[in-house]
Image (tube, rainbow, N blue to C red):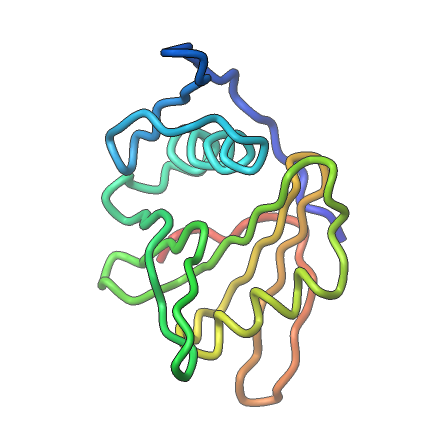
Length: 146
């Protein structure tokens, strides 16, 4: 099932032939690539609509899978500082496929969060993970932050 969300308008700036968008989590302008624009719309949604505190969002940080270095898009932490939800974003022209879910599932081997979200800006999917049963379930809305 798909998560139903509303996106907020983005604020873009052009500097030396590069379009930039402000990231309120990293507190800097970043290149407004198609994937970055999806990420920034989600950040605004999480902060403004879901009321997740900005301080509990982590953007584009490195994580290690065995000996490989990977970067996740967003991790949301709960109020106790434990990773709670991970997001994987794709450009709007990239369909959400099994390989996208496999990618985020690999990241979750290291993080062990109970919720996974994938989005390309128009298609959004959220799963809850049951580690004991080794199962997942699609859900219609993002969970409240514990």
